[in-house]
Amino acid sequence: MKKQKKITAKIYRLLSLSMILMLLVACSSSSDDTEKEPDPIGNPDPDPDPDPDKIEPFELADLDPNLPSFVSVIDTTPDDMEWVKVEAMSDEFDTWDEDKWFNSFWNYGNTPVYMREENSSVVDGKLCIKATLRNDPVNWFQTARVHSKTQISYPMYTECSMKTSSISAFNTFWLNNGDINDRDEIDIVESNANPTAECADQSTKPSNFPWTPWDFPTQMNSQYFIAKGGVTERHEDNYDTRMLSDGNPNKDKTWDEDYHIVGAWWKDARTVQFYLNGEEAGLVTTNQDFTRDLELIFDLWTADECYLGGLPEKEELNDDTKNTMRVDWVRTWKLEAK
Image 1 (cartoon, rainbow, N blue to C red):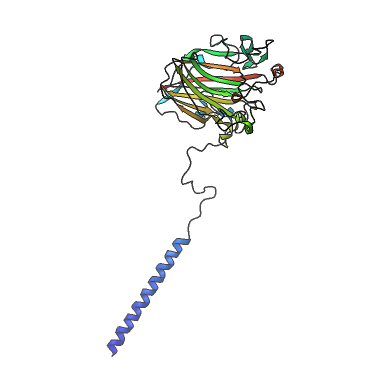
Image 2: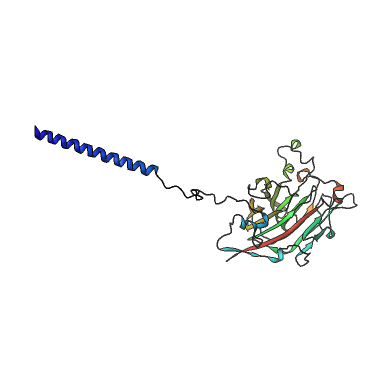
């Protein structure tokens, strides 16, 4: 009997010790779960999944002028390549450089356009192309076209800073070589900041209307043509200042409201990436190769067709606050192996 009591007492002590140990372990675990070192002030937990393509707010004036503008925003230059400036196709327009530029005088068919040298000039550090009124019942829209004397092929990048006129007309920056039947053409931008009220009225247009003039004040019209033996391949990929990132200073701005940087990276025989104010802005891929070296072109022209925005009022051509397209600078680079 005494022996049984001793055994029972030992069992009770062992059970008590086990319970005490369990309580100690539970308390220790609870303490580990609740008592953490606080994060240092000013050092929050890092973003576990940062977006590498997020565009932070920037100013156009802060973009590096020695490189394509997109390099300062999101740099997609291949690691083994570098941008080499092409001075013959770059200009800050401090003066007219006859070694770099020339005028052409052919007119667009079925339009009132009349090209002449006198309507292009360099004024106050800007290349200016002005539309003026000509005393002619047919070709009354006097204007100009400016070409680079140098031609270039891919891989290359070119861009300019331009502010459009405020009349219903296309203000253009493009690359071309050839004629209507045989040519390669890359239209970086054809912009019309002020289409006529009739043409901009979407409610009167069918659903299959060929273009969208009601969006022209902010729309970047970009396209290409490859014409061989009179057979033309064409495709567009238009963009809009309203589609720019929230950090872009020119988001939502119209073409005649401020200077915009428009550019194109001609990557290879079939690919052109367009840019607007440092951001990607449409991409075209051709079905056949570009085969020609191309020159840069600026011009200002108009046409009666409503899908192009319609004709300006003639009296607007006498208004120097509206009738001039201005280019602050143009810069061009070749992409070469390091």
